[in-house]
Length: 140
Image 1 (cartoon, rainbow, N blue to C red):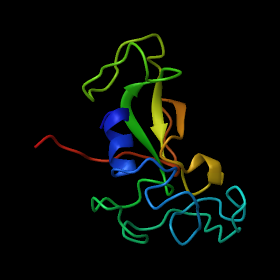
Image 2: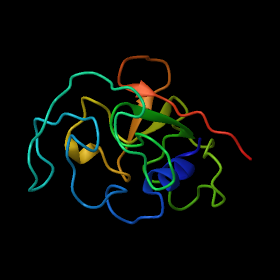
Image 3: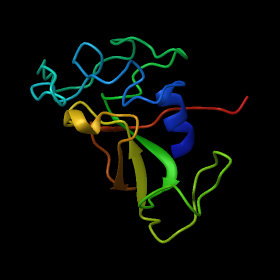
Image 4: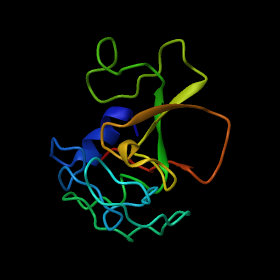
């Protein structure tokens, strides 16, 4: 899944930080919940991943796009995907940062501000651990 496809699916037709609006709670996503998002309330820090379906699906029926595990996208890292990148949703596989992939969405150990549809991070392609994952998608 490309970074552009990931963000499109995570937002599910919205323009807010989360598909459900502008606030975050541990009833809506799995993250380092002992810290509050903006002026919200702190919640639970589960300290592990949660099974798919533990939280509500977005309006398009997609589960847990935010929190739980950082999702690795097919794109190589660029500081921004605006500008010279593909405009048709394909992965941006050109560039000098070939050893880094784009991660999106935050994980179970992420700070609340990293669990947003716009959050992105660079990560080496080789390591594996409990905060990384990927989403299987296919073209119809």
